[in-house]
Image 1 (cartoon, each protein chain N blue to C red):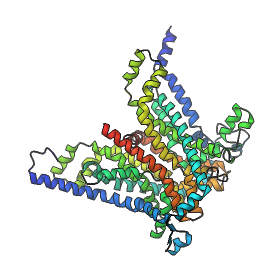
Image 2 (cartoon, one colour):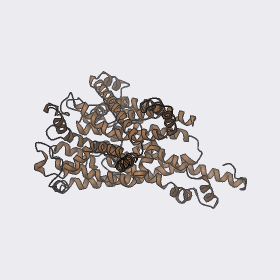
Image 3 (cartoon, chains in turn green, red):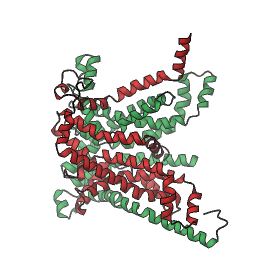
Image 4 (cartoon, each protein chain N blue to C red):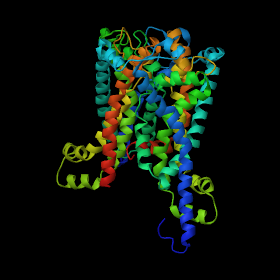
Length: 309
Length: 282
């Protein structure tokens, strides 16, 4: 409350106190809500993970404190590590292709051309569709007999290229990654496009005058200047991809056998199929580690940028 | 000579790039086209030897089949109720919270902003597990309220993060003038701030609707009654039970997608801006 010379001091004080009080009143409902439905459940999850909770305890009430037993059981489970490996492959594969294709599209759409905005918006539809819808679509597209992708593959190559991607344990994960890349490309493109627009076009013009060709300009101007945005986009992608559940669940349900049971699907099964609540809570908290780590890096970067600006 | 100049003009205006972009968009959106195509194709043509690229002659039979079962209209209605509820609760809680965090100096507001960023990290399934137990104890399982509350944990943190910078852009003088004129803090927000920040509010409302409309994990775990289950859960159940009835399945998928495309078409500019503001700029 600086620089209000004409108002008398007392009314200024009461005004700012009033404002501060209003601030607390304004934020209270939202904070209470988030406390009840977000913070408390997550803390309750920690409590559950330290107790032996199965269906009978849930209905009966009391449950025994077991310390870190649920964590020990989870970590000793080969299926858990299998799920961790699948999640890592799923995330790495998705990010690699999402980012590369998204970057290429961003480079295209960064140049002005007629109807560019329209096509850019149309591409975003892939990202906005509910994951359950996209999952259903790709189940159908990858269907062996009349799926359009298999028909295309058979049309351009030998018949053997047509394949039942999602029911073969060897290719199911690739099929799911393929669908997830489709969902993620527009999002990567949009954020990278925002980054590309912050590069001063005069840099490119000056380099072109000095005789740099398109590749050299890309390599020595675009790539280094896009590095901070790229790291941010990849970190966000890591958070979003690591927690994907719907798409995988709808496409394969984690199968065949458990060829696509990524960590989120694994947690779902322990908790909602086998009702091993204690272990499910423990596995869920372990699943939380990767997004938290990526989130910590992301927040540090945001703060760093804030201080630099 | 004249033709050469015309070609050069065509190139200079960037039409070759338009052609490239059109081709890429067409290939990329093939699954979406295919969904609509199949939903309009006659049943006996769907599982033909080679796929048909056009639904000729088109039929609306799959839509009437899908809608004649009571389950689909019911689930669509549930999704409308849940999504509108999420939008209302998100704005009701989010606008005042964002305003307080943007404009009023309070102890702990920096921590709150950080907490809101962190709140977006947990995978839905990690939250669904304890909510399943807690909502059951509170009698909120199988209710609209329980689902709306769960979905709002996804939209509220994000809404505040997007709205806070927007609110910072509202000129302070406007507010102070209103305060000096005897407007209370609530009056200031309603009469002065809200109209100026309308585009941001519209973006948040649109994105909250889209998030709630597409939400699946909470619908799957917190509701077991078809009377409240959202349409995403119904579609997933369809895939399991009518795995080969692709026509009705694609008609259902198309019906779910129509509101998404409509909301996006109307709010496109706001949503793209809000999205970029919420993620890259923090």
